[in-house]
Image 1: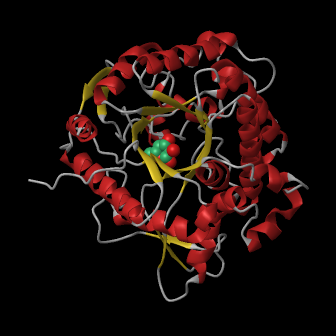
Image 2 (image 1 turned 180 degrees about the vertical axis):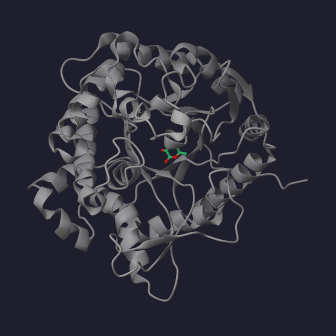
Amino acid sequence: MVDPLPRFPQGFLFGCSTAAYQIEGAVHEDGRGPSIWDTFAHTPGRTLGGDTGDVACDHYHRFGEDVALLADLGVGAYRFSIAWPRVQPTGSGGPDAAGLGFYDRLVDALLERGIVPLPTLYHWDLPQALEDRGGWLDRDTAARLGDYAGHVAARLGDRVRRWITLNEPVVHMAQGYAYGTHAPGRSLLLDALPVAHHQLLGHGLAVQALRAAGAQEVMLTNNCTPVWADGDDPTPAAVYDAFHNRLFNDPVLLGSYPDFLAAALDPVVHDGDLATIRTPIDALGVNYYNPTLVGAAAPDAPLPFELRPIEGYPTTAFGWPVVPQGLTELLTGLRDTYGDALPPVYITENGCSTTEGTDDRFRIDYLDAHLRAVHAAIAAGVDVRGYFVWSLLDNFEWAEGYSQRFGLVHVDFATLRRTPRDSYHWLRSVIGS
Ligand code: FCB
């Protein structure tokens, strides 16, 4: 018999998160243009088993069933992402009315069930045409994002009040442009740094466009990790913390880059950019999966830190260590670092992957422990307003294809049949009580 979960404050929002390319499929429908993920997934050797998001969960056609699953789960909100290449197939110009129509229908279906829609404008699926012009290495992509935000808000802003601009710009920079393990598959290492600035600039412009359209609550979702030092020298961990966390939180919350990164970014930062990036947000979205252990790099290594495995904890199917107290550490750390500059926080992603056939007790224990960790942070005075599980459905897990199953709902990818797992029923009773 496990202890019942502690009570969350009145109004605390429970939700689920997904992302367009991971679930929608229908990649050629209603005028959608190709994104960098279509190109990447169709390039041999880039994803496990050559998996692509061509069909994924076929959510584009089955969203009604998925909204019914959300309603039955009892969540107050649903975080999904809008596919930029459905709205602007080549990344610029007038919006595609049919592509936007899908999100119209989705939003209406959510509202009919009393579920708050929380769209993310950009979850990594850049229109390929923009990548062909330099992608996020090109400053103009920031302006394109602002323009796109305006089109989306003009169509949905009468019903959608809360928005997320970007998902995890750090992961997009690192995996997409520094290591080349995600789309667009570029391996620029430290030369990927302008990708951080241009995404953040795009974020600022998007905030302004959303506000102009009457948005009530706008946030940025960052992937944040508590950084643990391996060894006596704290410097490599501090450097990693600057790259992973502070590079994306400091300019938005404080209006400046961490010192040594400011020098490196100087050539791409124009007058006024930091003011745009610091356009006030109403909340910070935090995605948490695990802490990061960092030690000194070898003298001739290309990066000034070395990531090391964390031993002594259970691991998910992905091999990620399960460290719930890391979430409390992260949240109290954000409060200590930013003080009054930290707006309310939502956990916009947290969850674990399992492989086919695993006992779902693993996910229940994972979610239970992380919810307790959030509660401990609230008890310690951090203003956390909500918690979103990654993810509603098993889905296309980027370079890992369909091998990592993150869903509260199992998806049979041969038949696309959805079957709620034990953790779905568990969460339902948690929310219900
Ligand atoms: C996050 C991504 C999300 C999903 C989870 C497992 O970094 O935002 O799309 O892949 O990891």
